[in-house]
Length: 176
Image: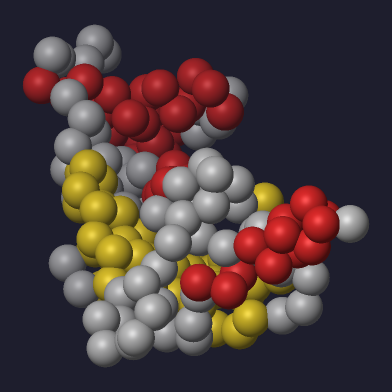
């Protein structure tokens, strides 16, 4: 099965939700990501991507996960899913995209992730991955709610812990 040119097209959009009622403007670190001082509980960002045949084939090749449930329609039709499904970790990788590119953004160090896969993602589904700040810890540690949905149905639910920079720590290190 060879992907078509259309199947290879990348379709993504980003949505960043920031409380605009705050007095302070958010600033970005040197890598254009947020510092811990710029975050607040409830801040969220979303990335959406339509999962294509090419995505599934490429993820199979990169991950070496060639399970027939992802690649063989005839076999997949005989399973409880009644058809092919995308790799769970392919959808979960969109969480990483939000963390790395949007919130907290570039410079983020991924420390931990808990995931529950609650529903399948099928070829052609658009996955919306959303992260929301839950807790600001010490030493730049941040806990975030991580959720992926398809047509409003949660397909992945979990929490992530990341470490991000601090403008106050950088300023103190320059002075001392």
